[in-house]
Image (cartoon, rainbow, N blue to C red; front, side, top):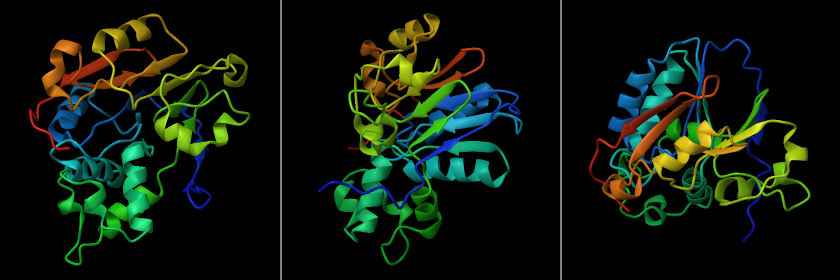
Length: 243
């Protein structure tokens, strides 16, 4: 059944000129300890802008801890801008359709997101339902998976923004802006090369949750400074995961 996204916030066009620094992090997947260590690295300040590209939940050990970290940063007046990933969207779909949310996310230890009536706690529902699909900045498009430029209106196909992989670009529609995305786990050396070459599309999903695929270059949670292209890398600290 085709999804309708009309009831959700779709995107935001943001002026980031007042930001001291701008950072982006993708695909945390329940790795809360790894996230905390990465935030320690960048020494986040309240004058910074921090963008998260979705997939906060599933696979890792502590989805609740990741959501709580983001919510606490917002509560403490940090400039935090989270996006929706496909894992959040599947979770939202289960809530909307009054299905067993755990059945769709079996083995991902999401019980801690539920109340005594086995419903998703309001604080997490409120967070999830307000997640937009992309941000347009002065010089970047930030999105979870990417855009499908083979269709007439790539900035209106929200399902593709959650799921697409290996997409070609149309430079005429980008107006000189770069795309930063996640969703597809990528070896660290490939991410570093993309940043070094200043490619127009940069994937920063370092496959943080795949700690046991170090030989393939995975297992890294990455923060990218959008102004200097400095890359901050934290290898997975959890050493466990669920599916």
